[in-house]
Length: 560
Ligand code: ATP
Ligand code: MG
Image 1 (cartoon, protein in one colour):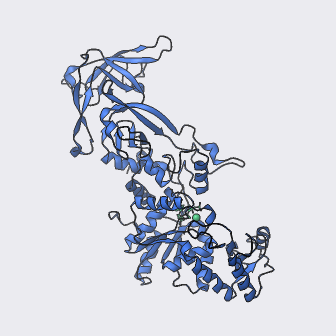
Image 2: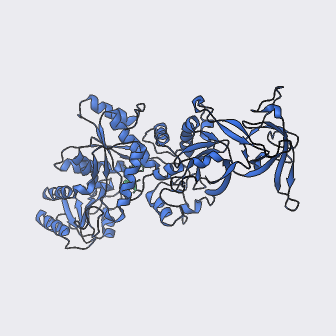
Image 3: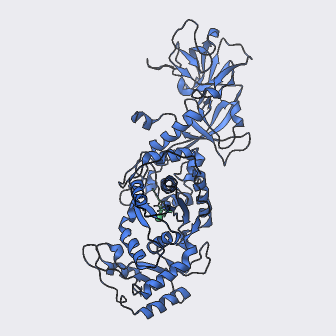
């Protein structure tokens, strides 16, 4: 389990506190109930932190339950990835790993119980007729001609459904509730359907499967869940949840509580859309570092702590909203600013020649490993006559406020010397700058002038002969617009894909970076936080992913 994090407070905490104060439960039990039909995403992380967090806060337990009642979309690959992700986020379901499919027999028995009580019937309407009979909220629906089928006939048909006598869709079992309810979910909803499909756990044992609304409350009740927390769209299903549990001889009646799902700018979160991106190879896979999946964020370099911190910051409410992805980025920056060692890497190199520095000489300067952490110490950084600097740190014709290299201007080389730009060498045909030239002041080792003269600009650099080539991937948002789900008629969320979401370059970095192990994070000074990719790197051959650039738009807007 994770180290105790501060207790949070929101309306669900208040509700549970009240239940506990009134002695309603011995022990709180929540659950995280993913359907194994895709990988978990950051929205699921919110639900995981909420459910496991509440259990922890109230000294209770949280189950991991796979809601695997729909055989066609589900797969063991998803089951395994979900387990990995929940564990990686720092949560422990101990011995409470459950599968809805383990309850199929019990659910079937509950369905028979409902039939015997005269509260369910087998119906032969086609899906189109079903919809037509159900009607609209403002007018009562029309009862199915099969609504008053005798109990014995219902039981016989339902058993034959199970036995495989019928084909898909020929019959459904429906709860007999209220065809004039303003809530369409109460107008005799389907609770069992025929589906001749292989299930990843139960194989071919079943050809009838329970519908979500019937199954979910039963799963909760069978396990003894006290608080069944779900997203807002299930609010209108709650009367059905309660009705079913009231009719049946279940061991307990859990309380369903709804909260607003997480929506993030520049992100799609529907599993269907994420699957489409994977299937059509728009991204490298579910764990592509640009994906909002937990495995994608992990590969991108996010830590479990930063994701948990994000989930604490966004809070839990009943109001649907859109969260700025900059907040998520802020959380990882805040963590890595304190912990990540620094290094110098030039992403877009151009040569800098120090004309008065001896040829062939190498000296080692002290690079500060982490200015936020005095314990982190220093490292030797090779300094030579020829260096690489960022192309953007030189301008031949520069505005007054440009404090980096321009002819005649003095700047500080980080951890090194003060240098004064003397000009540049250009390709006579293209005009491209091939090298920037400067002279250094030998009296300024470490970056300060003995006479105290002020130098505004500081730039990073690496030694040309002593540096290493580093493959680096600069990720940008996968979508170009804030709300890619918001598409006009006839459009697709894919129209908003950012064609430049991954730029792959070879950077010039301090040679020690070659020894960075997979999964290790560091700050490339002025360029952002990076992690060594866990999949594409080999020992001695790291591939770096940029997690985030340094500029924190969220932190800047929300100072104090
Ligand atoms: P589907 O697109 O298949 O309906 P889903 O996102 O609802 O997917 P589930 O596997 O059913 O997927 O989700 C498991 C749990 O995670 C549910 O309790 C669901 O309410 C919660 N959840 C899913 N998406 C979000 C989200 N964006 N924010 C918060 N919780 C979420
Ligand atoms: Mg769902």
